[in-house]
Length: 391
Ligand code: NDP
Image (cartoon, rainbow, N blue to C red; front, side):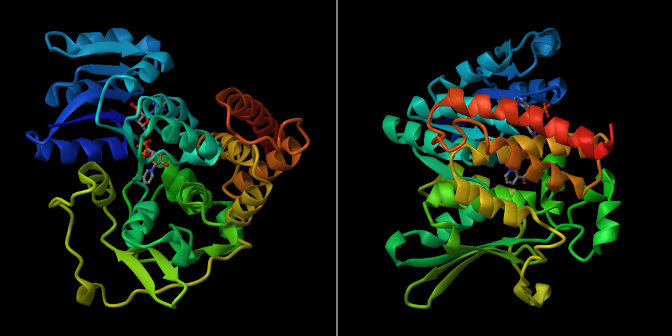
């Protein structure tokens, strides 16, 4: 039996993971489950999977969690440090599926124990890729990608030497606003932005998909995870979300990874790796789908990909600043304080201002410096958001 911990168990990726674990109770046992404010879902999952420990990120929720777990064998704990301690419990695999930079520390602590990480939390790689990868390397921990494009690249690469790879192409659905003109985009509401045409995901990543900020994160994640130079990573808009990534080799051959848009494929692949096991995802019916189409992203309406390229060129703390600024910009958009297109402007202004900070060009190889830049960039992004909102 493989012992699994799930960080972000109450979220979209976490619940899909638990769905898979619940279908194979003899193959998997659950060590730690963590969540945020959704105490009912956290306690229900802990009971259903007989978790050793359930942790909420919020100390003020501990009493409710204890009450919800009364009579069960699951311990209750709370706070970011309790989540990090849960990451140190012996496990065969930790699913890193907290949303945002809050996923960085638990991922680092699990990697430092030598635990294999199934990584959905792309923010960890964007903010501190070198730190996470070096921590894992030093402890002999493997990192398996869960993000669909990166799982697709990983699978398409199986058995091939990176030296033969000429280009990697990741796809983007284009989101709900793919065809919207610029003036309509400026008026897009959060309710419209979370309505992803193909994928069912958490609200934050859905809005990031609509602005292509999610694809910008994916670009940086590809560079960090696979060590491919930015000029050899391309993005194609593919509205059907069936081809998730393509790996082009020096001999002209291109290997594509296809599958229906269901995150349980990539999660299940990581859970079962290096084996493959049957998964409850729909089977691909290409005749029914009929056509797979591809187009270049529009850099004018969606500036996020240009910003990602600037971040990759700048290196240093640029990834941590980009992530922090986009998280603050997203908060302001979701709260109705700035418009949809203002999010990219906030990120761009924050990057420009932070580039002058001492230490901006340092490698993100120490947690303290990454957290310092994360903190300062959040303040600067909030200032940029206030000035754009006119107050
Ligand atoms: P959700 O918003 O659905 O879930 C986020 C999870 O993180 C929840 O368990 C939430 O708890 C928890 N959480 C929120 N804030 C904190 C915090 N400060 N500290 C600890 N835990 C916290 O997100 P998704 O499942 O959509 O995404 C999770 C990660 O996976 C993200 O990094 C995302 O980019 C990545 N990803 C997601 C994909 C998807 O299809 N959803 C695809 C590829 C990558 P609660 O809800 O209880 O408050």
